[in-house]
Image (cartoon, rainbow, N blue to C red):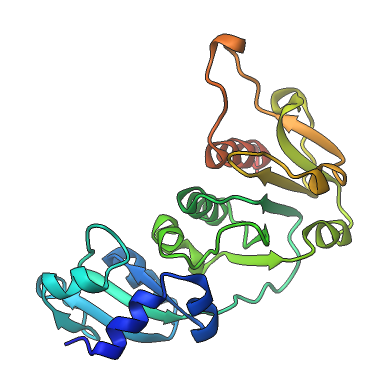
Length: 239
């Protein structure tokens, strides 16, 4: 059974202001929820449809799950977890940063990519979508338990304070395949619509691009998560 107050809170957690105030977020899907539970993230509430019962879950029917889901189609398991901050014990040589990435699916995929390549921290500008947005959480498939998203209001100043060269992914930059990618540097990926902000461009050491081998006859641009995947693959080549 889901109480009226629980139902209200779960729906409110769709909005960032309520997540921030309560220090809670919603995770849906058996795989995602299990990742958070296995990592020891405190769980406030856990609900599951009968055939997907978790030992700690309150069993609800499909109709009730449809009332509390944050998606069009409900998942068999929904958990409400406390927002935790993963402690980074030491600064990493490669810093990955995102500037104004607004699409939840793209941010979630970039977080998952960081997890895959062993990058423990992702630096985000304040204009980037909240990593605890339900769609982001789902897209990470649980990688949030291993990747800390650090939101910086003064994004450029923080990146400069790291004391490393700063490279931006940009279609007008030098080819990634003809560039020597520094192993101790910061790499920034911009928004889907506008690319890198003027403030970020002003602090770049250089711009790097993924060339379009079809030229003007090819696709207009690459998805930001795809761009990040290619960069990370090149950065860790030979590791």
